[in-house]
Image (cartoon, rainbow, N blue to C red; front, top):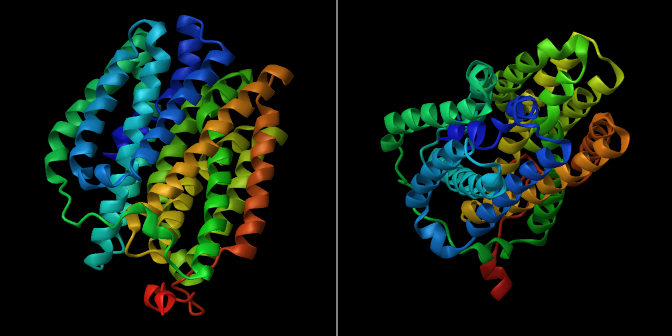
Length: 382
């Protein structure tokens, strides 16, 4: 599900940008507009997931949204006049799937004491990215339209085989507005978590959208473009199994800060070096951290509000999508002004470094030894 909704619906566009630029004359401005449309749709989907009505029907919405990803992906092979609308609709569907599917998995993993389930689940994003890095160059030999159709067809086959196994065994969580009914310490921690998580969205989306075209524009490194994107996916898929023990050892909040620091170094690497080692390090660092950050942030949200997981994840995802919308806009404007994406990468690296510091100072793990006070509605009433 995540491989289709995120790896294909969201990130297959990244390796397709240089193909579409060569095939149909996609410009820098149009590339940024399509990315923004998709991410704005993601924001709409994540925001609608806050509504009690959608939460009561989340399993059906997941299934219809996955079908929507497949159909809108295939239709990208059609007239360019439809592209903005199609990428927007794909984003809406992706937002629904990530919020509701991750909420169900987090709830069931907690209820059945299966801490390995969330990292296994989130490997789907990385596997989908790696798949797009391999499939797009193969399909693109027949043109960008063939690549869109091929990705949609393979996604449909994967969902036809696996989707019937997914059931919403965990009951829907309480209303979204109850997420504020908590101790001041937990609310403050959640606010800071939202801030750094929004910053992460701005940080990662710039290389996650433009990394392949950035590398393809460097003649000496152009043949590393697809490989780097595959490394992003594989690192995202398997790095979580190393991050989980670290999070258990030092706490999710500190592990979150470590991930931010590594990400800052990785994003900055291509700005200062055009060596193959630098761009490969960028791929590994980006893939190896952004899913870990998502996992730790979602886990902290669940720990802070264990009875309102959908609400907490929805709020985090909605703010995250705002950062994602801003990222491509800033990157496109900087690229148009300076004729290079390097200033955008540098800006992202600086924000990641600042997020590292803010996380260390403000975000506290409620499950750590010095845990935060639990929510106490009865005390508030008394």
